[in-house]
Amino acid sequence: MKKAIYPGSFDPVTYGHLDIIQRAAKAFDELIVSVLDNKTKHPLFSVDERVNILKELTEELGNVRIGSYNGLLVDCCRKEGAHVIIRGLRAVTDFEYELQMAQTNRKLADNSVDTMFLTTDLRYAYLSSSTVKEVASFEGDISEFVPPMVAKLVYNKYNS
Ligand code: ADP
Image 1 (cartoon, rainbow, N blue to C red):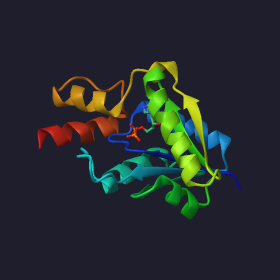
Image 2: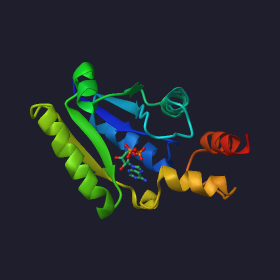
Image 3: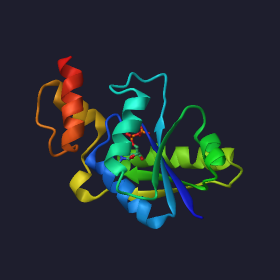
Image 4: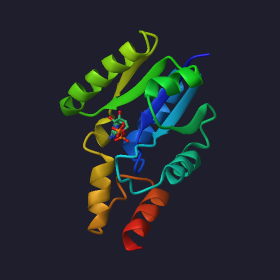
């Protein structure tokens, strides 16, 4: 069974992430979307909130499972029995960091984990979670960036 892990902050999940999830799910028997529990960041949504949002948005994709991890991604891969990490690439600016992470993870896993990159759908090439948060914080329109249920939750965070 070919399993892959798609890790990320997903704070919040955007149409760009969802496009990568749908495409990766077609290429593997099982895709585990894993929310990074990064204590050094100050996320808008808690890990549980992000996991629940992702669950709701992917419930129609039968081979997608949502989880979370803290610590090393390669340990999460080992635990899940996954040998592939999926990452999305938007522009050259993503590349340098992603290349370094991919090589580090391969080394840490004794060459047993590879990273595969999916290039962004051009419709979402400009899109990032930080842009969504910045626009929403000024009450701008984020309807082209995230699904309606996510937009509602994001605005609620800034209005509470
Ligand atoms: P991280 O904090 O780990 O970068 P993100 O949630 O920002 O987490 O992104 C997770 C992954 O999704 C990364 O590989 C990122 O490059 C990719 N990604 C983010 N936005 C897009 C997009 N609009 N199109 C394609 N890939 C994207």
